[in-house]
Length: 122
Image (cartoon, rainbow, N blue to C red; front, side, top):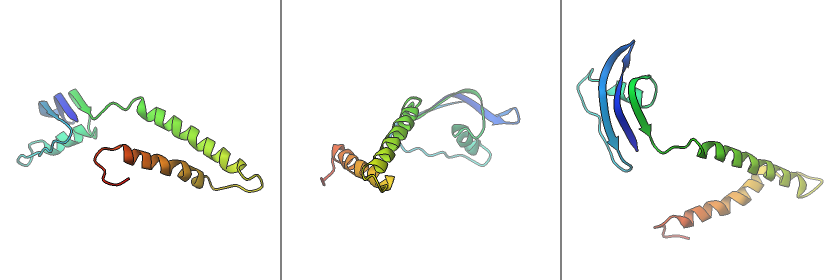
């Protein structure tokens, strides 16, 4: 999902686009059409934050402010536990940590595949 709410942007303190608003939901396909110099590239650069907005707001996708840090933390803890297990499962040798993560990750991946609706296999 993307939503632009009264967005104004441009270059060198000169606005190119004024008060642009639009909303596109998931699964929608949009086209950006216009003559040369009409601000198509400027709009895309503003949407991707290559250039700063003069005013307005852009909402781009869901809010991942909590999901990304939590995923990083859980992934780091999982890797530490897998490394500890790889070092201690057979005391004189060390198993590569990738084997431990694959043994845990492959069944979880298959679970995620089965959980999705409409899959003909599994």
